[in-house]
Image (cartoon, rainbow over all chains, first blue to last red; front, side, top):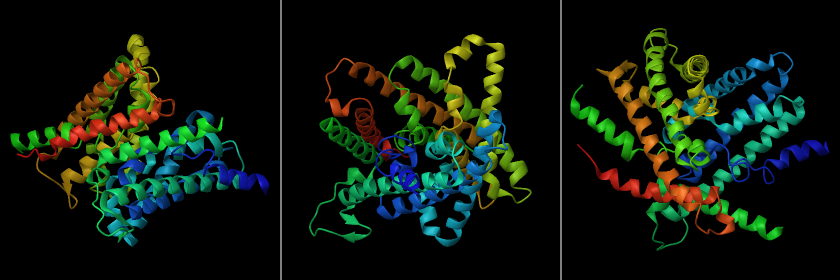
Length: 197
Length: 202
């Protein structure tokens, strides 16, 4: 049980996919304009991560090593298609906001990376918690970035105005704002790490 | 189908909606392989080639296999499989016929499979040039041309970035910002300058 909790928590801080491993940045930057988009993307990616980790760990004894990558890609693409179709059905607004970045979860390096580096070597339970932890870590990172961007770029948080009379800085709602925010955040985390050692 | 349309595609794919700097596709390779100009250029050409070929292949797959049989929901799966297989094929062909080029491309070729730019352009072509389950006139040429332009935009961004980072090697930067963080901040400033193109219209 203790190891399972460790598998779960490591994805959140110690091996956070966005800030420590620096993986899967395309969707992180593209959809983080508002917190709502960030949460939607995070949930979709967590679902795909969880499903593909579980299946990859279940079938690890059956697939030959040479063709494992194509197998993983098919598994991941299946889950992405499920996520895509349910998003279209239940939340068309979110689907339109996320656009092409939903099908692009397939090529998100985190998903393939976890299947390849963890799920194919570990049992079902630890793969499940690893996938869940990575997904939660990814979602939290998305929420952090999108909260900064939404607040600075439009003066709002989840659609509510926070400070009256706050003049929004439009650049943070633009693509360049996303790159600046993640660059400075990564620098900030590096700074904290350097100070500790 | 007219010249104006092509010009619009060119301007928007290369400058206004530059794959890397405004759509964030292929960002991983942009950050990881832009330390020197030469490998950056090799990667750009490899990506451009794969994007163009995959635009052609996925157009045919969508038009003649998915659309007639009402299987459009299989788009993601079929596209990524086709792209992965194609990249593998290219790798084998290059290794067989030109070991020199194979060595130049090295690890970049297999990496392209998971480059979001390739799948992104394929999906984008379908979204833009197939409206309500029907192809627009000349959609094949538009898709092909958009593939080429996106490749050019990718090359442009890679060249700019690697040139800047080569010079930065000689500079003294804060320790916390070294490598990744600084690369992102430079990307942000580059993207800011590309925003200036967004008023362009024909």
